[in-house]
Amino acid sequence: MTISLYFVRHGQTYLNKYHRIQGVIDSPLTDKGIEDAMDAGKRLKKIPFDAAYSSDTSRTMKTGTLILKVNPSQVKNPVPVAAFRELNFGYYEGEDDVKTWHTIGGPIGINSFHGLIAEFGISKAEDMIAAADPYKDAESGEAFWKRLKPAIDEVVAKAKDGDKILLATHGTLIRNVVSKWSDIPVDVSTKNGSVTKVNWDGKNYSVEYFNNVSEDL
Image (cartoon, rainbow, N blue to C red):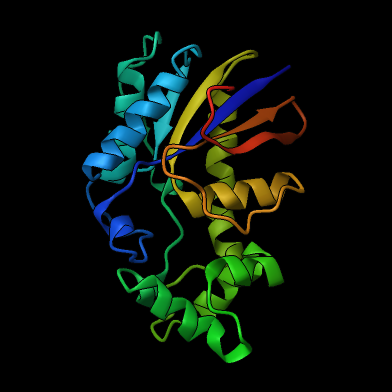
């Protein structure tokens, strides 16, 4: 049995362009972001999707719709699912990213999210964000996974053997998935429009590839 999940990070948004932290808050795709989504659609055109989902943010729904527009699938729009939203960065939502990582990691000599992940792993890095949030709205690694994993399981439960499923979603979310189900390092940015393939064999999830922007999908 094999069910294949194709996680695609949304195209570039205005907050991405301005190097702002963007989790549960939303901003529109830039012109480049639309191109990112269309390029992903072209690369995925040979894979007819049996179902499609996205988070309920405008950036992922637009990305998923643009991908499906050129796909041979009968599916025309992704189903929005709130549990596929990005990590909630709490107080740091919308903040300058360099300032944020300096605030959180600077006292221990680490000034980037990549550096925190490389040193502590992604779940612990998320715990550090949550601990630093004065309003305590940011999600811990455990809280994030507890809302995400059941949603993935539900998608798989609705699928049948051989199904290929599109999930238009977010960069940190994808890195969490890869970290949980593989030994692939995730201390690099998930590229806008990149594809990450996860397979379910009836018992276990495995990551076939991460952050792919090539034609080899």
